[in-house]
Length: 119
Image (cartoon, rainbow, N blue to C red):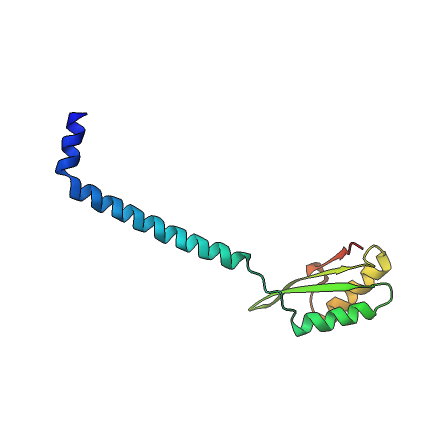
């Protein structure tokens, strides 16, 4: 125990420098991880003009009822479309929705997901 205390006394400056570096690294790490988590959790809740128009079109199709639309895009175009509506349980209505969205957005039907809305 005595040797450890002597070693600490003789290397006090090195220990303080290493401790400060560790604290700085920890601060930078937590600041960056907090920023990333926050930006990842933030969603744009505003509807685009296309989402608004598509919601109106779908709601006017017989059997669809209330509808909500989310379009996911990147620089290259539309990545996916999610439609939630009250009439999604009917196979004919689902087919009409699929055809309308595919045609309106000029996208493949494989990237369109349709779900039933809870009432």
